[in-house]
Structures are given as structure tokens and as C-alpha cells.
Length: 297
Image (tube, rainbow, N blue to C red):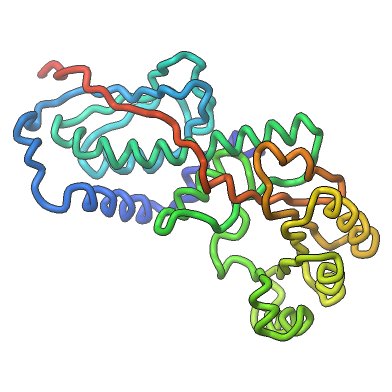
């Protein structure tokens, strides 16, 4: 069963959706909604429009949660993970509810959907590049996420089809250059980390050259990250490491962009992580247009 056949929204605890929706709404309306008096609570219908052709739809649970908190109903025309139409404007969903409530939820919901769909779209574009090159490794995001928005952005990666990597510092041990400098050596850092994380956590070590990578593998690292290697140096190091340590996973990271990604593909590289999945990622252009009053019963 692939991620496309799964209801990915089931990974989000309901209380988390409620908490996020309430937080976003409180940020946007901390006290009075003066414009609400202009529209009142008459029932209206609003259409969600996508104006970025070929985008991947992501973030539906968060969008719906915002309006649910306001007593509105969202009916999706497309399902999450689908690629939206290539037309200049694609009707994506319909929101029904009291006019002032629809307008209260409009901006927080659109902000979220624009960001999540932008990330998922970039993920899909990167996967298409990997598929074209017949590379069988995993593309991954990073921890370079927007403060307070990590869960949402990580979920967008999931919808987009790439690995989320570790969610936070508790998810997996990653020993970076500063950890090694403070510990004294790679081997010492791995020993210290293993003594507290136990068998249930993998240990990854960030390595700036081949010698560090080999030291990490000898010391028992589960994953060796080849950080900021040139493509040529990466291929040579990955080949040598796989020959000596076939069970160690090799990750390439640092300076990889959508344009340079194909240069890093190698049968000896298991993972390529890209900060550009979240940093500098374009958003998708959505708008919400009220169509008019709903007929009264």
C-alpha cells in the first residue's frame, strides 16, 4: 500500500488540529472583528480557487479544521495529494457557513494551504526528477522548517511523497560537527550517544570528508551523512564506503538544489536531503470567493 492509497490525515491527532486552528484564528482575530458587522451571520457559499496550474493539493485537514472551528463545512472537489488542473483557475473546494465565520477563517486557512501545497508540489517535482533518472534512493526533507509550523510542513512532505527525515531532536540521534568538536572525536560522540539512546534509535553522523565518514562507520554509525561534498567527491566516497560497510546508509546533503539534484544521484547513495523543500519554496496561489447567500429553508 503506497502513501497515495492511504488517508494520511489519520496521522494527525484530532486535538492537534483543534489546537492549531484555534491558535491561528486567535492570532488573526485577537479581539473584535469590526468588518463582521457588514456581513452578519447569513449563510453563504464560497469557492476555493487555485490559480497555480498543476499544483499538488496538500494541507486539507488543516484548512478544514479552521472552518470546522467556526461552524463551517468544507466540501472538497479534489482529494489531498491530487494534482490540480492545468487551467488558469481550478475550483478546488466549497465552503459553506455564516458569512462572518467564512471570512474569519479565510486568511488563516489560505495561508496554510498555500504553504502546504507549495511544499508538496516541490516534493513531487523533485520525485519526478529522481524517477526520470531511475534513481531508487529516498529524497528527504530536513529540520529547516518554520518555527511553530514544523508539523504542518513535515505533513506536506508526507503528502508530497518524500521522507520527512527526523521530526525533531528526539526522533533520531544526529551528531553534527559541533557535537564532535565538543565531544573530542567522532568515536567518543557515538559511544556517548549510544549509551543513552539505546537500541531503538539510529545514530547519524555528519561528515565533512571521507576520513570522517570512514571513522563514523567504523565506530558504529547507522547513517553517514556526506555533507557539502561535490558530486564527484560524493560518488567516490559513497562507492568506497558501501564496499567496506554495505549495511551503513549513505546520505548526501548540503547545497543540493532542484537544478543540481541529478548530479548527486548514485546507486551508492541511499538518501538525499534537501533544505530547499521548505526553505525558499514557492507557495501556491489560492483564493476564496463568496458566491452569494444560500437559499433559506
